[in-house]
Amino acid sequence: MLIILFPSKPFEPTKVEPDFQSEFETAKDLGLDWGLVDVDSGKLHHIIERAPGQGFTVVYRGWILTLAQYESLYRALWCKGHRMVNTPDEYRFCQQLPQWYPYLRGVTPKSIWFQPTLEGRKDPNTLQAFATEVREKLGPGPYIVK
Image 1 (spheres, helix red, strand yellow):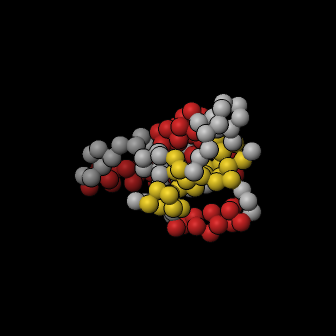
Image 2: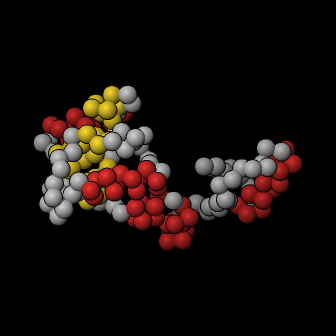
């Protein structure tokens, strides 16, 4: 069986996040099983406990989670006898550009990435050097910085 997991409303963990209300109502109207998760605490609501191998297949429909949040959610559901559609490794592969870019290089914009530290990049000279490096690697703009 399938269950759709939606994020809960902040400070009201038994209500759906308003941005997903329409999809939540549609799932309910179609008679689909559903659950809620507080993405900040990882607390699950309206999730039926099942024996391992007897649980639901879970599809998460919500905000992008950090890998640590996703792994925590995956473990919490696994402990209740449920299985998410994507493992944490599959989630990381799909979510993080450096993971999938080699496979889609020919059909996606040219991309580069840097280590996630901004230490020292507040200095105007360092920022100028960074901008120069981007131009050298990507050519003239415009660019999308993410």
